[in-house]
Image (cartoon, rainbow, N blue to C red):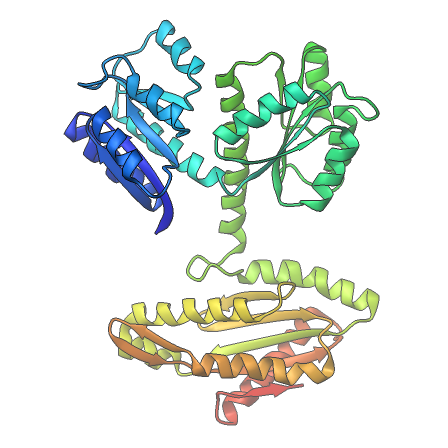
Length: 417
């Protein structure tokens, strides 16, 4: 379970139970339930670990005017307000207290929104965001807002610095940039960022206090995903940021569905051939060795017959995980179908070839998989083709022939062409 802790402060036992359970299931972390401000104070002061977030009812028996929200905010605990009442005056007051968001208890969809919001904030902790602005005040304001949304936030004071920071940190997912900066303006920086980072991997939001629709169009034309006019409302900023992050998540999920095996989580046959053709062309051009390997789990039908398909699935998942952990990061590892896997590696030395695949074979043999109280042994046969063939297909055909030879020679062995 995640080491984070979440606090729910709600005097209705019914709502408290529903919210606590839903939040716990969504984030996989500990949720502490309290029914009053007094209980919340006790939970916070007696806890050795800091609470990451609190979901707080605005009206409590011992805190009828939102005192619980104020107290928790003073303790440095970000709050989402879950309330049965709403007005424009209340909205202004809550935003003035810098609550992350407020959710009105109106319909069942309100609970869904609340739980999705908590899940989103939980995931934000692993997302890096870069703020680029020559104004320290404006940069600090945006950075503070993003930190309150749980993001990992970095700052750059110019377009040149922003480009350098992105080059050093290619896993940044969101850039928020001002337009008016000395040297390189925001639009020019976006153009250069887009030369190396596509829109489905990096979201960029442009901001400016002038320029209107024309500047907005320029930003988006040259690669920004969105644009916000200064000064912006906290709510608008939050919604735009969340919308862009959700879009990145959606693209990532669709990409995973298309390129990854649903059972094991490693790449699928389609991705193997798409990436493999690129690697083959590069190896051919640079005259470097390419290694294609096929492996097959031995007696897999017997595993399914003996331990059921759940047992077989457990074997496939563990084999996939072990292969991915033992292969180099640059190697392409994929499930080809059924109990068959494929590996594609570039620039593997001749002398390291057999020891590498022998290590994979021995590691699989040594792996003891326990499923439903049964210890299931697992071995695999490997066929390897090394060099530069006439095509990727011809190399895989040779590797498959070597795999057949390994099975003919007794299984649980490596044969290299």
